[in-house]
Amino acid sequence: MEALIDALLNGLVQGLIYVAIAVGLTIVFGTLRLVNFAHGAFYAVGAYTGLVVAEHYGFVTGLIAAPIAVALFAIVLDRVVLRYFYDKTPTAQILVTFGIALVVEETLRLIFGGTTQQYPTPAFLQGAVQLGPIAYPAYRLLFAVGVLILIGLVWLFLIRTDYGLIVRAGTRDRIMVQLLGGNIRQASTIVFALGAAVAGLVGAAASPIYSIDPGTGFEFLVPSFVVVVVGGLGSFWGAVLGGLLIGELYSITTLVYAPAANVIIYVCMALVLLFRPQGLLGESEVIRQS
Image 1 (cartoon, rainbow, N blue to C red):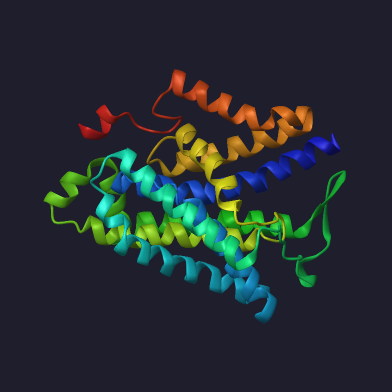
Image 2 (cartoon, rainbow, N blue to C red; image 1 turned 180 degrees about the vertical axis):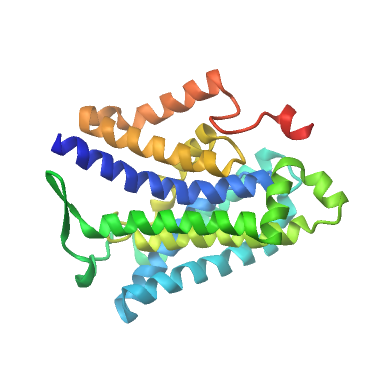
């Protein structure tokens, strides 16, 4: 029972990281139909930015600097490269964003080397919380609560702001939004930067939990794409549900039979595609275009 509770909590933490990355992926895809394989790079850049700043100015300062740096990087990337691929085929989008991800990974390797690094848990956040029969690290619980609050703030942005309204409408019918005068490109740049900032912040915050290396972005990107497919392309709450489901499934499988953990999430994705191709909370293209 103690091992099961620990696995469930670890699955929640890991699943919330997938959610944070997948939310940015699914919003950008829903609005711009952009398949962004560079989104995992935002997580890695945020993790390294937080690591460097934290070493000199403290952990909290690193958490502030990471999302700002990643958001600025995303805006430059959007303006200089990605804006020219919004109307291209998915194959072209995958190739260019995958290329960007490789450039970022090799740049990080050139600057920081290929060794694994991990920021120690700050002294004021160390310790454990007694949860029934187990003592669980306090920082992991704080991290989980923080990511839940962050997801809630992103949702409030989408439902309470004009830009969020344009994005939600564009997810269903972007052509109609443009015909009605909505500046979907400007809104999408802001949301693109927001999604990148969320990934960067989570990357910095997760560095005391998960070690980082130049390939970290890909390690979290691939499961996050599985989350998007399982939850439903373009669905915010689908990304949340899919992330938590995949995180818990991975963690429990690791407890039962670790070699199958990396396989079970793809089996889950295959089953969803087989029985509900639009994802658990996604809408079919027929509905979205009607």
